[in-house]
Length: 397
Image 1: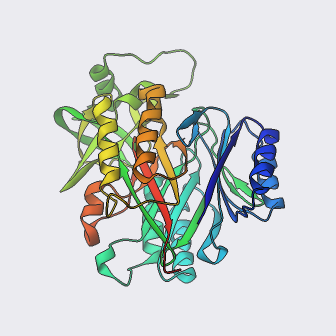
Image 2: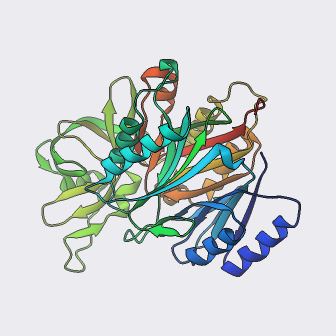
């Protein structure tokens, strides 16, 4: 399977790059498109649709391709994957129906291939990540071989250049700000492996979430959650404007670490703060009674951990991939700036393959300990993580 990447700052630049790459006896069947909400995604999709190329697309909070980080642009990975080896599904959904719609997606995958892998992107700032993971897992059901553990599932939440208002996913002729787009791959034909890894370090004493409801944390150790975090950070929220619910970017550097038994903590970012009831609105659920710690801003050890974890999912040092897809939390980019280029380049060198990716509002997949746990390892919804996926056509196809 061949993979080639293109990028541009406009529809015309992409059209020119696409025509150039298609004139080189390359006949792609699949396009993975990540672009800014500022770009005309319909026009870009129409270009690919005219060439009978199927589309997996999402808007971003920044995008990257082969080590180059873009802002406000368009990046595309083109693959000549056999159309019999994959299927694109697009399901519109809502916060209320996400679990049921994701469950339908899991069932579709099971009906399509004996051993499907799901690569997903979800639109909707307030769409619950846990409901997506749980729905796909339940819809797919138990797999034939218990050694393999849960169904293969990786992906990310679409972005909107940090506006936190409206994120989109799209495919041929379809686009929505509340939807799931899924690239379902036949794992009997294409090897799909990946990992979700973080590197954020915990600090301070363990605290208890004493009141929460889904992704809203009201009190920590019986004190208002917002006040607890502000005291910890030593900052204040600006009182400008009349809105109670405000974006709280400072907290993205200091996410909550929700302790879990025998596996890494689950990272939860407080994306919004409620100045009225002094609660934190997280990008992911924080169950009442959870034991948590705050996090330090990441350092270069975080990059080293991500690279090391990505190396561990290779069977041997010589193994390569045909293509790489990375879903990296925008909080990593906010923390590291252009040093993120180093993380992207180092991960790409592990596999020596073309790479495309974007900065997300949340990530889907298995952590290292979940991968190592085999049958007991579970897919989860993450924040502040780097989720890397490697694709390789099997030699027996």
